[in-house]
Image (cartoon, rainbow, N blue to C red; front, side, top):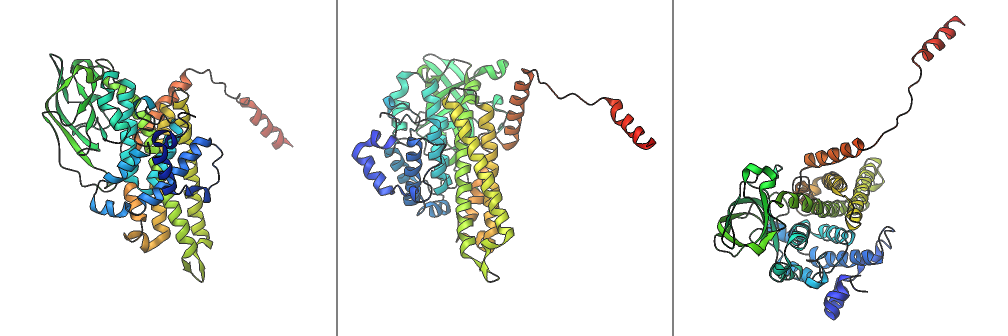
Length: 438
């Protein structure tokens, strides 16, 4: 069946050998998630096997050395995971959003840096180009990226604005045959390694957010450069740097959508991106639970495994409940997107719950491991460092609350809500008097 699974379709015998190499080992742990269809289960099994065989051995070293996992990304391209939702016609796998979320979760369980690279590349870059780009640029700016030959990035934030995306100061000036872009974009994941970037720039400040356009820009163009790589707390194997545009010429064909659509495009793409970051948070949370459960079962204190202690069981229960709840919210958001239903609120709820679950679970894992959780001999401290960014990028937790509440109020404003009748004001008083008289 075309589009049913990336591996047999995308790479034939090579893909099947890759599946064998990955081991398809997830079946030994969970037979089924119930909510997932056969294709989605296969994606989970394949990505879990890849994470355990290809990411587990190198994640800690890559984090310590701040080393971009180039070989891993190449292999992910061969497996079709760098173009999860790109049409097969343009080199992608054509998977649904739930399959994509499952893949990012499993990769992030193995290495959160890899999860970030894959999420930004797929959700923010490829989705922007495929959804809003002109077909004439797909051969250069979509196919090689969907096949993992090149990596894309997304330039929205700036040194002077983060959550206020409408305050973009990067300038787009119309010239013959296209545009000239000047400005700086900050905190860009896949900066330095990215071969192209989706960039948002203001062409008319008087129009406010309607004066912003979006472009796909070749990072090798004259006037385009990267700033120094950021020295980060977590996800250190992913590169983060500023994009510096000095009068960069961008042909008219590389405008995404229509002139003035930039802010609208950014908001819609960020909804998709939040599903990916929610999945990344789930991967970190699951890794933390795996570690905490295994350690608690093997570590003895007071003559028995600490897993038998109520305090430890309470922590494990809290971790599992928060993880499972966030996972269901994430799958709901993904399903809503696949069904072409509004999913902005669902995506915000998923990212909020999953990112906070990631931080909580990583924190509790350190508590369960005690001193061993505080040293780099065990991955708990890396999970905690990696988890912190999930509550910040692609919309802070505070902004997620705002998105959820705004959507909730709009939904209720359109409804005629019925409330239960209040009891008569005299009823209690009369009953009290009769009782006193008796």
